[in-house]
Length: 149
Image 1: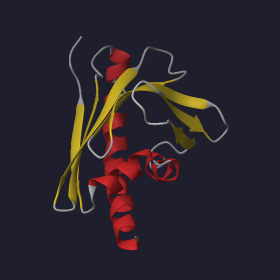
Image 2: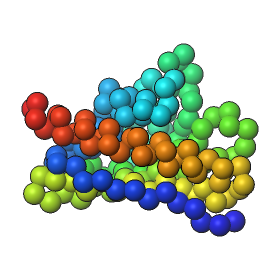
Image 3: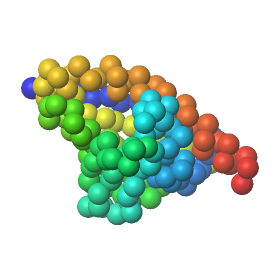
Image 4: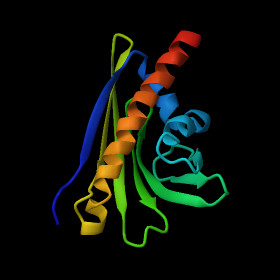
């Protein structure tokens, strides 16, 4: 087994609270998750450590599930992510770190480990593409909310 993690970050001209809302609000998370998962409908969780996180699809089924590992509002968020029906064991940990300085937030995301099997490693390029789409959308949603509010 090798270590293979996706690590990306983006600077967002919005306070950490606005960025946190884009990550956790069901209506806002729908917008950025759908940039790469078109059948996705709603992200459900109470955002308390130890709670379930469910990615529900438009047909009502659960497409992925996880457990919330860390929930420190406006600061750290981490959960497991397992796509259901992938045909092989595939679980990542998705971790967000938010660092605010002068109403600008650095959002860093780490996802992995993709190196636990050849099948899982083959998913890495798709994950990179997904986060290349998601992070600019998260940025836009948070910055637009600052201008509107």
